[in-house]
Image 1: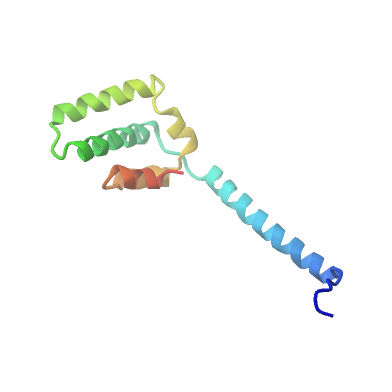
Image 2: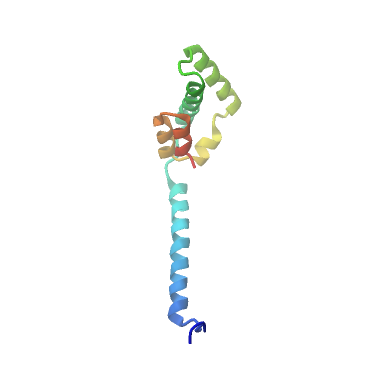
Amino acid sequence: MPGVARPATRVDVLATLAIVLLVAGGVAGRAALRRLAPRPSPEACAALLDRYVELVLRAATPEPAPSMVAERQALARKAAGERGFARCEADLTRAEVTCGLEAGSADDLERCLP
């Protein structure tokens, strides 16, 4: 009869459970791999911050003076704090920082980050 729902069979329930477990395992696996990935050094994080400042400045001023770039980078480092860019070291992977350092624009750099 059309429109009459049949009760779920054991196979249906097991198939649904398998799908849910696969999806959950995939999500947990990605998180675990990210957590275990090598972390960037403080120097790499400082270089990433400098690169971001330079790219943002170049977007606003195509040929900024080197002194202006250095000044803005120093301000950004000071704003990041004495401990350096601690969130970078704790939350980013070395691959994400490498991607950011190779980016050609601030938008590209931001796409490298989670």
